[in-house]
Image (cartoon, rainbow, N blue to C red):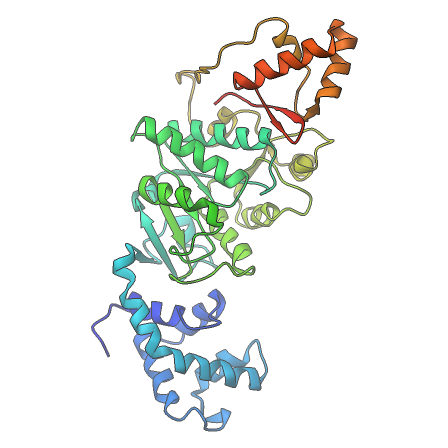
Length: 390
């Protein structure tokens, strides 16, 4: 055997094809990593022998979830891959990836019955000792939802709370951007913790390359999957259990009725984690899941202080957030008040303005243009949507 540490040897096993987290945990339950590797290597020299010749413990593992034929193939593939995985494991140091194991996790994750066997990390591991809040939500978020997640992330960071999320599109990314904005103003603020479903060298989605880089430099990237692991669909729900287990409070900003964030909610409830939700308009699909959670007993989060109170943190002496935008004057202020949670078209706003203020179509169009230029509104495909304070 080489002089690799047990974690590095275990990584070789984690890198084997079709290795799921459950198979990995079961495999390592059979003995020390180097002993398991030796068993597989010994068998690899006679892998065309009958299935019964496979060591009994490996045989039991392989046949738990699949037929003997599939198990035979899986065993063959693992044996073929052992040599290659050794080279990949040795490259971990060049990727700036650190391996941590059970006993080095926060207590609530360390005691979790479904805790990952290993975690691969990049960044500041001290964030795991901070107070932690998970923020999750839909990938197809509205601008209102993204702004809300941004603001919650920023304020929680300013109060020393590390925000845990999945670095996905929509709410996850907005929450982490809010945290990063706070960290850039002061390194005393808590950085972001991102739990991803791929290897730390496989950015997904690809447009988040810059965001991944910033989180790795200013916060912490975590994955139970070794480098090189691609974005396979089954890994995303598995990732959500780690987000739930790391969170003292789980906040859902926007979620549809069938949203993936509700998987994280179930994982959190199974672990006794407090679940909070930001209410939304009943007519907005993106808020149907969060409104359902509130109906079913989740705590309501109107502002970041609600989450801080749930954590038992006193924020009464915190200074309010400063909004640098120029306050709108009449008639722009009245036009802005017509746009609340749901986006409206120019015709919608003009009709309301005519009814309430007798404003002409042209005056409304000019007001909307000024409000957009000053950062109070954004227009997407002809729909005007209000932007909250940042």
